[in-house]
Length: 157
Image (tube, rainbow, N blue to C red; front, side, top):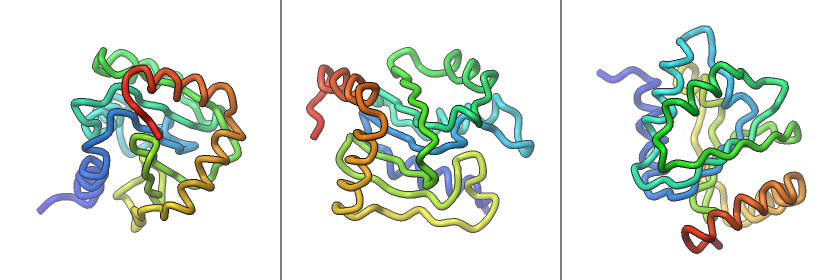
């Protein structure tokens, strides 16, 4: 029988399987827990990313960043994936955006998913549009630069 975390990671992997661009808004995405080693945490994160992913955007709280974890992520990440780091302390919920066209919310941060009961819920089109507008307002030129870079690789709505 699979552990609950393994089931949750499998669910995330399934939801992002078609992503060529993935935005993860999670204040704690660059923070591992005392439950696991940093290298294991990075392996799990990279393990859910699809083979055809070109851009990974991590929107996080700079007050929570673990530079050691970021160093491991950069060293272990496949070279065809470009990682973008955007700091924002104005987002509490954990929102994953696939190809700038659909999104889902995780009830907890990636570092805690599967350790306690939480949900993974699709955002409605209306909620996605509102959240995307908020991101553009909050992250402004930084997000626009990433979007333009992504458009050079594919068409993004």
